[in-house]
Length: 86
Image (cartoon, rainbow, N blue to C red; front, side, top):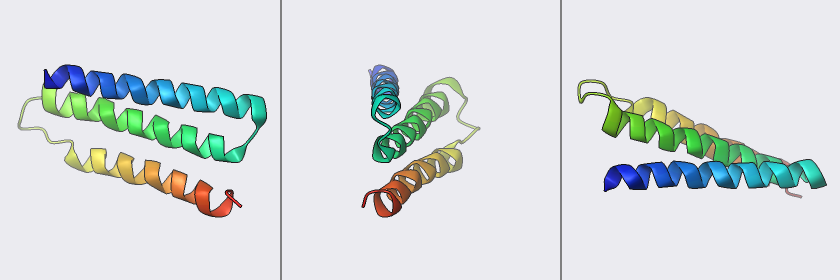
């Protein structure tokens, strides 16, 4: 059951990223761009989570790459909120 949740979270993040980036392409609102890029990173994080916990053996740990993608995603959104949100 957990595997299905991981996949659904990844698909949801990808769908949000696609919708946000399509809206950015239409309106050129920079906040939509930063939000879309954040969701791209979150989708990558969810895919890494699935690969780490389901696909790879327990001897290989992707904890650090998963945390780095989360940090990068949130940093992109934070940058957009601070410098382009005004």
